[in-house]
Length: 192
Image 1 (tube, rainbow, N blue to C red):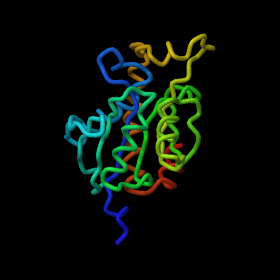
Image 2 (cartoon, rainbow, N blue to C red; image 1 turned 90 degrees about the vertical axis):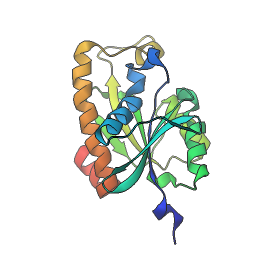
Image 3 (tube, helix red, strand yellow; image 1 turned 45 degrees about the horizontal axis):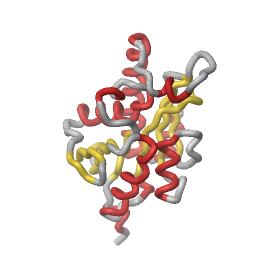
Image 4 (tube, rainbow, N blue to C red; image 1 turned 120 degrees about the horizontal axis):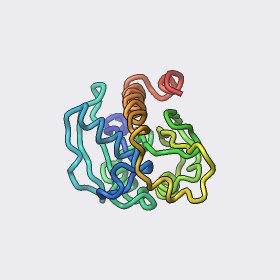
């Protein structure tokens, strides 16, 4: 029997731990994992591989919601540990990140691709030695040129942005459910 068919889905939201980063642009991955946890009535609190994890069922599949606690630039260490630990497959890995190149309110699903300058994705690709995992990118593109992208991604969302972000997170949660139930190709056709 193919062991990957038994493996759980891993949904990894990228972000930085701690209250200081909670509502920052760089923490959209954590925000979406928290939203899914509320929706599917689980808590993301089990400590494993330097990550907080919650297990639930989404679309009749066992899913583990993951928030790496390594800080963004070392996210790959946590993800790699989780994949190796129970011989899980990168084919059932969905990584959620913010994306400076996408307009606010936009999401993009992809089966594979480069890091696109995102340090969390860069770390995961480096540790897994593959670009072949599903990613959901959520747009945070600024309306004006930036002097310092690091400052921008670590800023809190404005009050007006937060309303739009709530809508985007809802749309993103639907896209995640579609990937799990219908596969990445159908989900990309519907949500990109």
